[in-house]
Image (tube, rainbow, N blue to C red):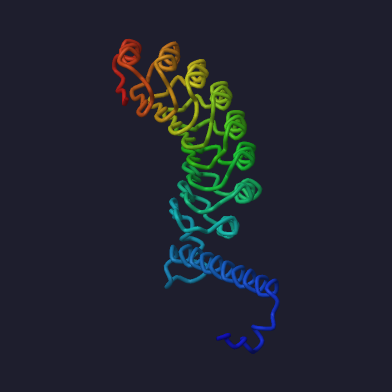
Amino acid sequence: MKRPRASGPESEKPAEEIRIEELRRREEEEKQAQEAKLKKLREDIQSLKPLHMKEEEKDQTNLMIKELDFASKQIGDKGVEMLLNYKIPNLESLNLSLNKISEIGAETLVEKPKWPKLIMLNLSYNHIDAEGASILAKSNSWINLRELHLRNNDIGDGGAAALSQSASWMNLTILDLSGNNITFEGATALAKNTSWTNLTGLYFLSNKFGDEGAAALASNTSWTNLTTLNLAYNDLSDKGVIALTKNKSWMKLTRLELANNSIAIDGVKKLRRRWRTCEFIV
């Protein structure tokens, strides 16, 4: 038995028109979801100010804010722009990890410089990529920055090379570029940096340095205050370890992490002979 044909407006619409309407519906839902996130961000910022205070007094409250943690808020690039509209002149620590921020958000941060006293900036697990890293590297703001976290942003060799040329962050002590698909080319560029003389911690785990990258890093002569180096998950062998021991500048090294590499006992022995008081994680 044949089923009766559907009647009404829906049965008369072509398939293409139905598809377009569905796309529009989804776009509208995504727009509303983003607006809801931005509204929540606005509320989070406003919640930092005591509600009972008068408007002129709230600005004084902003002067006391030194730390903001907006991790995992999914605010995107528009959220970054909104955040920059608030005057928080004494901000020292800002966590924007896991927020779907792209090179557009990075450019907003640089073009509208705020937070002259910023010490820690966490942009990990976003979509900064090589272009965004290049934009950040050109910033001459945040001269007091001590910690920069860019873990898992896929900045690659291009982004690493751009960051290595930054001369503004003279006070940088912690740099985290883990999980960024950096090969020996990026390692070579980073090793040539001469401005980060105050670095104490470098985190490069889960990249693609290989033995050549390790050898390139070992050629560095300016990181004389380095105490922690993390090269876990980097396809290193004893050859790369031996190359590391050739470095003569890292005299203060106290922790070297090399877990999940292909390092044999002979490589570990050479490390211990080079840095006798260092803790090795292999």
